[in-house]
Amino acid sequence: MLTLERRNSIREILHKEKAVSINLLSERFKASTASIRRDLEKLEKQGLVKRTYGGAVLIDGINEDIPLVVREIEQKEAKQKIARRAADYIADQDTVFMDSSTTTKELTNFLGGKKDLTVITNGVRVITDLALFDNVEVYGISGKLRKPSLSLVGNQAETIITTYWGAKLFFSCTGMWLSHGAMDYSDAEAEVRKKMMTVSQEVILLCDHTKFDRPAFYRICPFSQVDILITDQKLNPQWENLLQQNGVEIVYA
Image 1 (cartoon, helix red, strand yellow):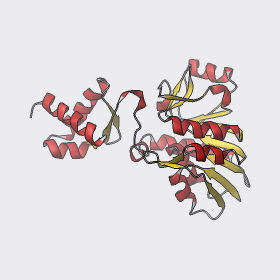
Image 2: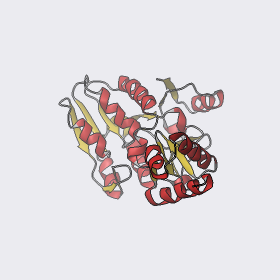
Image 3: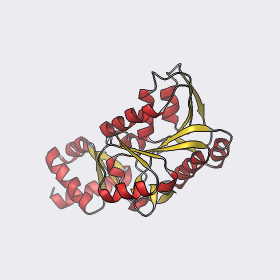
């Protein structure tokens, strides 16, 4: 099979399956993994796919919702560093909101030493992870299940959120844009995070370096509504100045 034919076939597979792995493509086309990586690099440069660890996902404009199983392995080490630093901001007996993001999910791994915590979340994976901790009381926000993110969203979830109050909110986003703030692919996810902000004393954004200068479909909030940003790499002066002008404390993990 010619290289161009193989790339067109990869595009067809992605349109059907949304995500693929390099190893499976290599077996399917009887091509080396190096050749498949070059194919994916070329398709990414054309703006057709987004490469991930070990594969790629289909990109359909800026409204593409990347599956949770893919997002969980992207920038995992960076997310773990950020989560470990974020845990320092949780005190014993705190009541905190946690969204359904994969970065926030990593935070659950660093709560074992805390005492008498209360966590309110719309993340199904966060709920199941925290079920193993005797020191954490977990309140799950009910609502409609979003399967790509395993999160609970919708009017019911937003209404329930307003009945609580938390010392802190830990959340993440799909992208960060200088003129628009924190952004997300899903309007339903963004609305849940907005509600959590209104009932949280302190808002803490967990965001790895790949999210900067990356727009998405829906605006979550301007940076003026964020108290602390925890990230894994040094920001350029333009980003640092903008965040500081908006009163955001920048913390490097």
